[in-house]
Length: 94
Image (cartoon, rainbow, N blue to C red; front, side, top):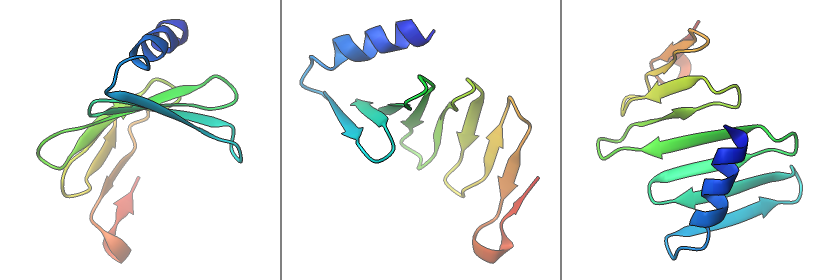
C-alpha cells in the first residue's frame, strides 16, 4: 500500500492541483491533492485526511486505521476503537 500511495502521490504531484511540502524539523512530507491531504514521516509511515462539504473529515492514521471526525468534533477511530466527544474542557475520550 505504501508503494502504491507513494506512486499515486508522485504522479499526482505533476498536476496543477497538487503540491508538496517537506518539514525539515520533523522529517515529514505533506502532499495535497484536491480535498485530500497526505503525509509521510521519516519512518515511511503514511496517513491521509479528506475534508467533506459538511465540515467533517475522515482518513487513515499511520497504522492504516480508518477514522472519522464530524463537524461537531466527534471523533471515532474504527481500528483502535478510540472515540472523543464534546469540546474544550468537556471533551471526553476513551
